[in-house]
Length: 152
Image (cartoon, rainbow, N blue to C red):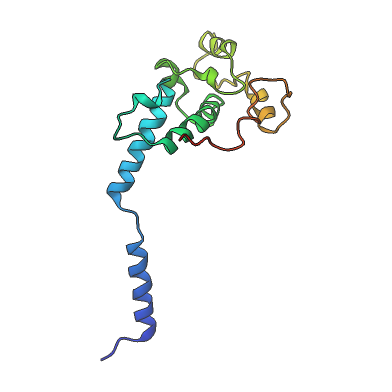
C-alpha cells in the first residue's frame, strides 16, 4: 500500500516547519544577553561593565538607541514598572521630554498612589515623536532617531 502524494507533500511541509523552529537553548541565551545589555544600560553602566563573553556590540547599540524610548514608554504608563525602576534608582531623565522636575513632581505627589498619574512630559514627548519639537530643543528625539548606532 502506497502513501498518497498529497499526504507525502503535507508530511514534508510539516517536517520542514519543525526543522525551522528556533532552538530553545539558543532562544533563552539570546533573551539573557538582551536582558544583560538593557539592564546594564538602565543601571547607567557601560559596555565594559558587561563580561567579555557576553558583550555584543550590536545589542549594546540597540540598548543605547532604544533605552530612552523604553524609559519614555514606561514613564507615560504604556508599560508597567515605573515604581520599581524609580525605587531602584533608574534615571528617567535620559528619556526625551522628561526632566528632573517631572520626576520630582511624581515622587512628591500628594494624591492617592493608586490614582493614575499622567506625567507632564508626555505632551512634549508626543510632539517630539511627531517631529513638532522646536529645532533648538536639545532633548528632541527626531535628530537621534535616524538609525541605531553600530559600534565598531
